[in-house]
Amino acid sequence: MNRALRLRSLITCLAFTFPHAAAAQALNPPPDPRFKADILVIAPHPDDESTIAGYLAKAVLDEHRHVAVVFTTRGDAGQNLVGYEQARSLAEIREMETRQALASIGITNVWFIRAPDTWAQDVSDVLRSLETSNHGSALGEGVRFIRLTRPEVVIAMLPATVVGENHEDHQASGVIATEAFDLAGDPTKFPEQVAAPEDHLWYGNLMEGLHTWQPKKLYYYTDASHFEFMNGKGPEYSMTAVSPSQHVSYARLAAKELSFHLTQYGDAPAQALATGNLHDFDQPLPFVLAKSLVGGGSVTGDIMDGIRPGAIQFAPVRGYRPENTGPLSIELGEGWAFYKRFYPAHNLDVMSTLLAPELGVGSGSHFPVMLVLHNETDKAVTFRLHTQLPPGWSVDSTSQQHSHPWPVSEFATPAHSDYPVRIRLVAPRLSQSQWQMISWTADADGQQVGPATLHVYVGGQ
Ligand SMILES: [Zn+2]
Image (cartoon, rainbow, N blue to C red; front, side):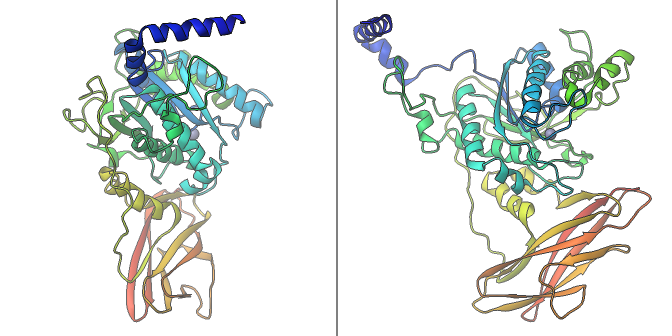
């Protein structure tokens, strides 16, 4: 009998000798204290944790919270300001930069799901990133990290298309975090993760031995360029406030955290720290309370308000319910169509009222908008689509144009079918940035259908 076998035999004997202790541990093991988190952040890229680094510094250094961070990607598609390394080599560097950055504010439990970094397009679409991240695989990882860290609170990026939001990976990580929040407590989801290993003191076990876990609160943050829609929807933290334990402002701690991301920012954060010009870091930091499963505390109260130790019951969400939109309808497609169904399915009541569909585009830019025409009737219907554009706009192209010249297009839609339509628009050249509204209506089977409306923020030249 070799040494490992002898050891195993001894351990087996001990378990047999103390059956009650062994059984108690198997049924209800406490979380591994090295990994138990008060807050789990699920972020998309290295540096997206930096957006909330001021708050995380407060939670860890002043409130002694345990914080862990999971990144869905490693930022491998980005630029390198300090060297030639790119792609996978850049990912290795960014992973290390991120670990050093988070260590500077006391966070050392950091994991990477390693979904590919999507190259940002002119118009982001969350579905594209969910595709490249192999959605189900990334979600399984997200659920695993919630079950491992058993967080009280999950913080993620806002799953919404909002002006200033510059990357579809940001939205996709928010979708994955939300889904994981809602699935981690369900033993029928990724059941291999929560099955007991046959013998955890021996090798080759495939059952993972985790336990279901229902987090208690979900918060979102965003890199949007406007924040007024978040007013009153969650807490806001001052970044000019001084950390009682560190004796410097949270803005300074955030700048220090960002300074480790050299491939993305070079020495700019270090310069800001040296000169004391912390304007980019001292703006108030708002969050949206996406949902809370515990009583106590107000919507705008502290992120940890109402949190009591211990597990709560699994809280199933509503799930998708078929809508009753009428026999003929028109809606914005892809990401917008998804979010319209995603929010109610995941009990994100605040999100359904937070934002009208909006998009930021550059002055004079060409960009696509997807529409979907729905025919729920028993017969084929032709939709005659009208695009209402403000002055200076034009249509570049529309898929499936027929006899009518722009701005009318006809789409023969079979019974019980959806007709996806892509319209490429050309924004006007504006001297000053401004909001404009585009809408679509259709004549179909003698009815007026719509409108579907999109608020567009056109950047100035
Ligand atoms: Zn990012």
